[in-house]
Image (cartoon, rainbow over all chains, first blue to last red; front, side, top):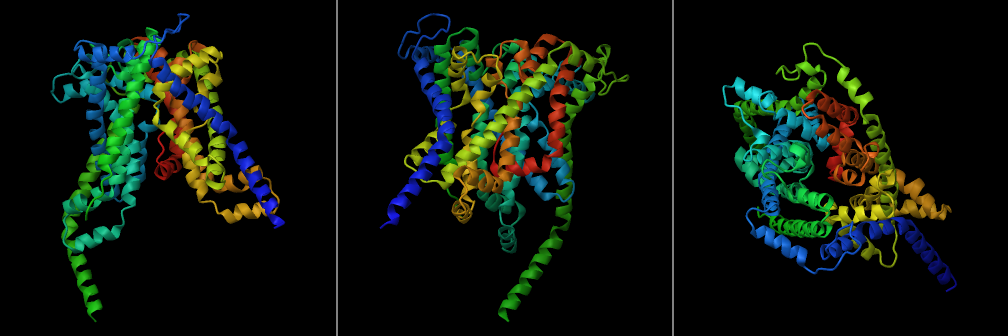
Length: 306
Length: 293
């Protein structure tokens, strides 16, 4: 009976310590993360120009403008959304397939594993800006190595970044190349977690290579595939740095063929100072990312029957 | 008997399959090496081309050879002494050090508190932190910019660093690792009269050192390579970070590809050297944490 107050006192003391420890982190998340998020929603409902003294509330006008622009086949905003989805559709599957293939091969060979792993990892730790400029130089007409090699092989030279048809796939290729090292390492970690006994047991049952891959590797790798798909989809939806640095004047050209939603946000918000409209665009981007994440987690995490 | 028999049949069976696989296995290995080499070259060649161009004199850049016939360091001299490159370097370094130090301390402390303390509103607070992970940075840059203008943070180190001084993913990660620290150790330290912060700093934090190291490496890489926010919050050439400076410099250099590639080489090589040295730890860190820089 006598001890009770002391116990409560100790517990109180610990609680106070917990709040002290969390004081700065919680202040950070409230003021630097949560409040600006709410502020972005608020801005998206206003005609916000930082230079004018008033930022009048306009309701859903900015969102209505996005819808009108999406309906207009010639608008840059529509092009930006189309391109962004194209980046995802081209980029995510090719990145997954290529990095899984490389991870499987790395898992299969017996020598030089460390060397190969380091080599594939190299681009991942390099800044996107530097990589964008190196590839811009690689893609140069006439003198760029890619066109020189095409010449050597007797194939016609390609305009790459200067053609409205080829620019987007060319930029996607760079993004895939850049992110591959990360995906390979995650796949390798996933492959390591599959117990060798499963393969042995299946082999004894007479399963061939393809059956092993199809019925053991893929199902057991499912959590890894989901994780990477979500991560890569989000990063392709946020495509910006590559496009800004690989197109002339960072305009998302030629003919807006490579522009993205985030590039629109940048140009509208910090170029034309239409910050309300730019904020509305980011709200839409947020909604898309949230939706896609939820859908992917739903569909890809279904359990496999063995 | 029957068990041994079964075992024997199994062994024979496996052995048969092994010998049967011999040739297929060899071919498969060959194909793997072939494609891995091809892919590996495609990873390295752009960097070689970058370094090669940076060593070429201006007159030679449109020659299609990979390496210059008369290599020169003149481009490096020009970029280092005639541009703001040294400033950009220093700015990037300072910002990366500020945010990495802060992340290492606060993320670990918050992770420890969520793992080892019980207090009212704990779950709500943790949920709030996790929910900020869902909001893409792009949505926050406009409010951050308005904030920075209001508080005069534009063109300051704090202005560039503040969005990243604590990270939700880091708090989550450290909570996971801190859960593994035995409660007995913490209680023993309490009985010995160590104060609560001492328990964190002397007992808990050292036990999760590998996780802290991984967190630091990714945070440093992420900050070093960050582009969109530093681009927005800096307006003067002298306050830019390396990626922003490189982007501006390259945009202005027009077709002086030898200078652009020199800038790219300068921005890539130091970090790449560090990464090659710590390659094993970094790769293990990624596999351990799943973090993306």
